[in-house]
Image (cartoon, rainbow, N blue to C red; front, side):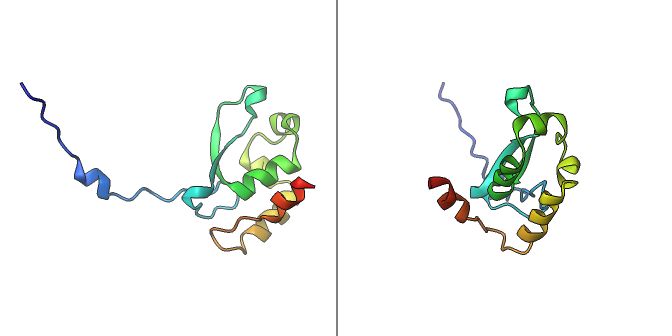
Amino acid sequence: MARKYRDDFASQDVESEPVVCSLCEQVIPNDQIEDHHLVPKSKGGKIKVSLHRICHSHIHAAFTDAQLAKKFSTISAILNDPAIQKFVSWVKTKPPGFDDEADERGRRR
């Protein structure tokens, strides 16, 4: 007997909820969503949050894995850091798809 395939057209028409950055609380474009382990995987972390690529990069530029594991293992702890507060207030002034390419150029030197 031949199989009957059912196409679920309704599920194709449904738009997914926008993903909001846990750090700057802005909508993340689909091509900039990155998962951040609150405790680094190298330190046994499993819990992840979604961040903008630029926010994720800034966290890892500001803190070592050991610091993230011991002192900055929650978003609220990260947000209490003055350097992160300054960064978040700056990045909130940028358009939703903003990606700082200056970081990429600086790494090549």
